[in-house]
Image (cartoon, rainbow, N blue to C red; front, side):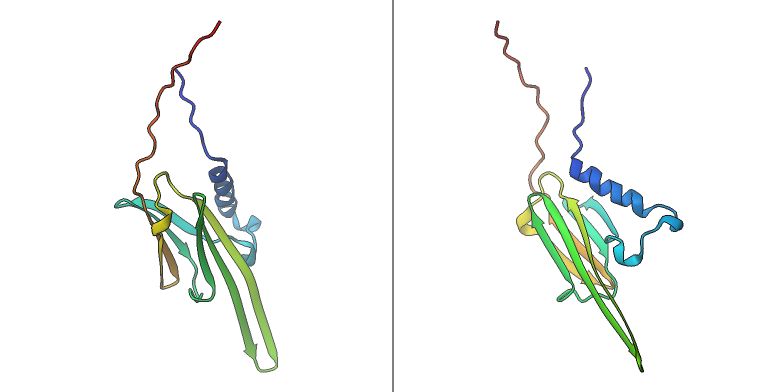
Length: 140
């Protein structure tokens, strides 16, 4: 018997952007258009997401949101440089969304920021539903 695996289309879309970021430098997007670079893993009963956000103020520039099984990291960069009579500015918004694993406790999400790295942890409290076979009634 063949088992079909369901793959969430939201995850496939995220994989597409991960793939695009890995293209050779001649195809690379400008820094202001790139998404937030992350690593994600499960460790000690927790789902952990680490995001590179150097030079940002977590109180003003970074927002972490959780809703409907998705974790969103939104960061806004506002940098201005003044050098005598010349000035330069860089503005941009970076967003990264990841699907939370089955059993993630959305009410207990925690985040901390240190040395340019945002770390978000989500406890995994419930077991994911097991696959079960459903009997098919036959009517004739």
